Amino acid sequence: MKKLFALLTLVFVFGSLSAQKVNETVTLFGKEQLTGFVTNITQASSEIVEQTLVNKFEKEFALKGSKKKGYYVYQNQPCPTFGDARYDLYFKTEEVGKKKNRSTQVTLVVSTGNQNCISFSNDPRTSRNIVNFLETLPLNVEAYKKVLRINELKSEIEALEKDRVSVEKDQEKAQQKVNQANEDMQLNVAQVEAKTAEITKLQENYNQTHNSSIKEQISKVAKEKQTLQKSQSSLQKSLLKLNETLHKNDKKLEEIQKNLEQKRAELQRIQ
Image 1: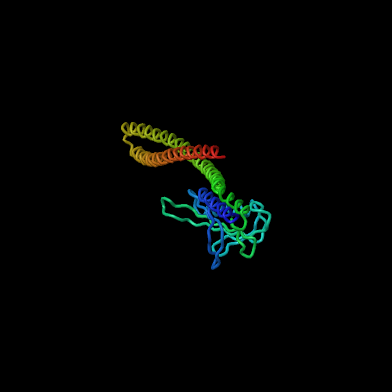
Image 2: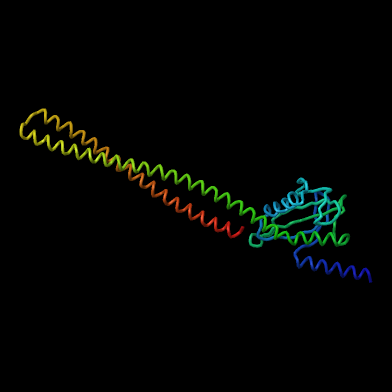
């Protein structure tokens, strides 16, 4: 009767595990066969799940370990989450399945030493604690992903703010150049007008006197005017480019501000 009851209990436990997608398994650690527990986590890469577990064991539980034979191994250390003993913990993650149904498989082995692996047949209470740990792992993964995204958003916001300051400085310098170019243009226009007036006056004098020296003076002033007009053309081209730069910088600032608002809103939403 006791054997039948134990068998029925074991069947119930395994049925419950299957429904919760946590099952006992046999895994290879090098050439050794170890009994452990396995579960699959969707919507998270193997790397993210692995880092979640490393963060859990090493930062939260303060365990010290190393990587051996494809597993993270933490030997002879207390872990109250599982029980009162000192344990050897082994875990690995790997992506399984095809693209559409891809998931990360987590294998966790808990031993009391000398490869004495915990299972429902030898330690149901500790096994249940292990199952509970794996059942809540998806929540821990989501929490870790959230922390990563928060840190990522903060870095992106910081980078965007630096970009904005840089573009604003460029915009300020470009505006100063535009202002100076406009002043130079106004001066140039005034100088061209003055040369034009001077040529007109000299021409009137020449028409009256036909003095050859006046004619030479007209030629000289005309060349000076031509030089000023060339300078005016150069200033116009420079102003065109500077105004294009101002326009581009305005567009950049608009885009940066838009991205900042989106990322700040997302950060506020998930914090």
